Image: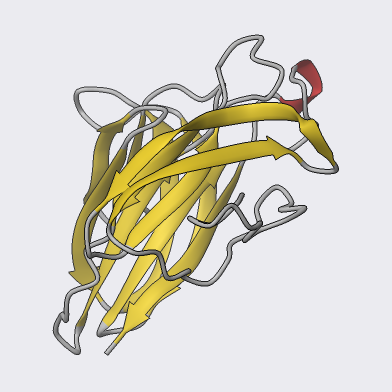
Length: 189
């Protein structure tokens, strides 16, 4: 991906890789994303407008474009200060073959996220704690089948993004990448 002067700013970015924040002036920028190692295979090229804020750009979809077209998902981050006893968490649904999901805490009837579909993202604020979170098929009662569960430790005064990524059935997909929940820290106070 080139910067505003046309220079490459990220290269050979692997699946599940997360970079540090990059500085980019506010305004409209032409962005080109190519397949790793193949600059002639353009996966995305277009103008992107950003304000003076923190953003996360997630590459979602499939380069093959068989089921879900590849695209950058541009999300403005909510990295504002929060209390020492709470954590702010954003869920980004980037799993092309997963249905809309509910995310619940296994320790009780706490619904963290409700009905988040592919390409969508939502924030929630929770008490700082260790959680076992359950990814479920979306239902009206948030009681769908659990497709995966993960242990997550959330520190107070911290902002996180949790990427739901990979495939529920990787053997049937263009990339053999199993479903996973990757939690990254965006900010800490």
